[in-house]
Image (cartoon, rainbow, N blue to C red; front, side, top):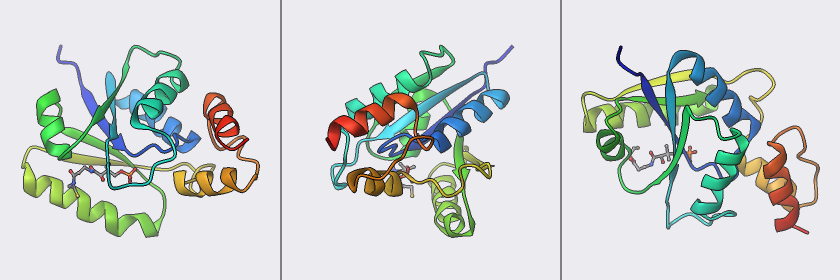
Length: 160
Ligand code: PNS
């Protein structure tokens, strides 16, 4: 039987419980996921791509169904190189929709075989974003419950 793999791309700076929820729910629909961390030189990042890859790997407890890889350049090119044609994205609220709609259509324009599948973020996670987590942690706020334990530790170290 064919193995069904989806690509779950993002910045993951840092990974949050919202991301983890999408990964767990994605695994109910796919045999495996490739979590793809964008290497974006233009973005002012809190964690390096290598750190984010390691944080994600530890957060999924080494689940063999989840591969975590860095990518640069076009997502559709990376998907093609990995032999995957489904992109998984979480959709939080109305505000996410326009950006996600544009991105999904641009990706499909670039590669007709690419399909984007959206999972509605659960009600516990719809207000969590990496950007808010970064800001709150930087300002000394408590982000426990919003990020996996290993990410919480990494944030504490970064901002101590
Ligand atoms: O977590 P993010 O920052 O919302 O993820 C955005 C991401 C990484 C999925 C998106 O920026 C991306 O795929 N970038 C790669 C460049 C690309 O393919 N751009 C064309 C699609 S609009």
